[in-house]
Image 1: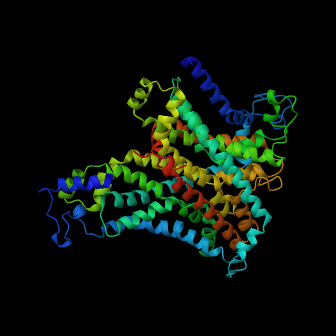
Image 2: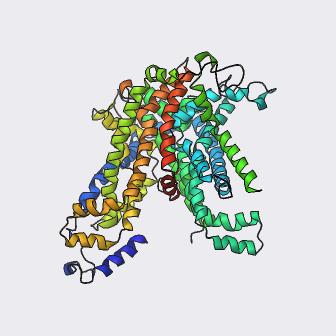
Image 3: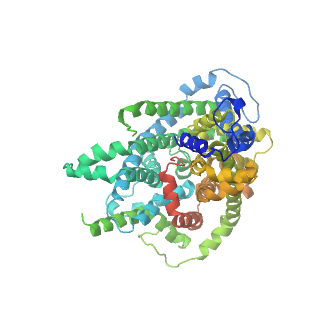
Length: 319
Length: 270
């Protein structure tokens, strides 16, 4: 929209002040900036080449390598669908899909719910709420590795969490040596680290709701919950949708938390797909097989993203 | 709920939320044998500021810090240059194929970039660039978010400014440098902060591409130190404090701009 408006403004401003339009092009639009038609390419080329070489081509190459037995030392031979058949029977891989799916199913709703609740809470009358916002944002902008190292210390068997007064009588919980607890810790640190970011995105969405609408609903006698579900939620739904899509994409690629806190253990209970991919490729030198894992992950993320794009018509309101 | 009670509850929650970082700071000051004390205590029998100096040598934090700073500064400068050129082309120039190229940039935003690390590694390895900072830095420079952020700002500059410069005989380059760049300086500084933090926090790619420890950045060093047996937690926590502190300072000083940029959705989620 903006660029259209800008084009009109340029045309309007060209009345008389600038050299006449180039009639040979058959368009009633002056030559932009008066420079040669192709000059734009010289500016876009560095970015475009970089994008092609370091983002687009690796994605395509990854899809191709998935059909090979490529290793760093042994070269590359194409083996058809062998990798994908092997993946279907690879208990470690299937486990990693399950672990990551549990991660996504718990982490994403919890993250979104907490972000939304916190965004709403910080709209109420709180002294120093700008500073609260900063406090909640800090972990989201600090290195995940440092945050994960901190949590690894907190959840040691004789660590501070097990010394909390609330835990007295329960005995020490084996946070990192029990599979279910370890996954809970990995999910917990992820939520702790990242909800501050989504809180701010959703807060901006709430800010953009006009006060008149809220005031009108108050006059109509809508209660707090009614107001949230009938006014706030629909109006903030574009921001909510955007946030959810990106959070889901990020969640499927979870890596650093698991790598630092548990290393995938105990017994593969926190082995995410990306961690298994990393170990397959760079510990076991099975680059082709790892690329097949990447392809499956790519497809999973694509399906989840398209499903959300399709589903948004039912609940996202743009206007 | 009155606003005094509300404020108290909110700040109490923030205190609990910050507990891990507060605990990190106090652990960094404890003697080694009191990190896991039998009773819960913030302060050990001694307050050892020397742990920070020890982390500098034991974790090799000085080297890691220097590497991380250099890599982040180089990455930030190059990211700003590439993003400025791209955004300028999209916002202010018309050229054949512009909408097709623009569409390509938009599509790449939805690609899960970390999924493609294997071919990226193979490519750099074939080029003889594995275990170099060139390979570390290059792939991070071309994300489309920066270009889109700057483009939004450049679109708002009135065409009259350009036209005036054009009449004075300025070239397209001159207009970019003398007219456009000064006007989008606020957006450039926000982008600089995000580029810097992106490099500062980056983990998976450095872990893959860097094998020599003298080239490592902070996250690789911390991860290596954390996962080894017999971790000296007080030194590790001192390193974590020194890693997170710069982020805290940057966020505190630039909070208004950062909150506005994140709220505009400029950088996507995590």
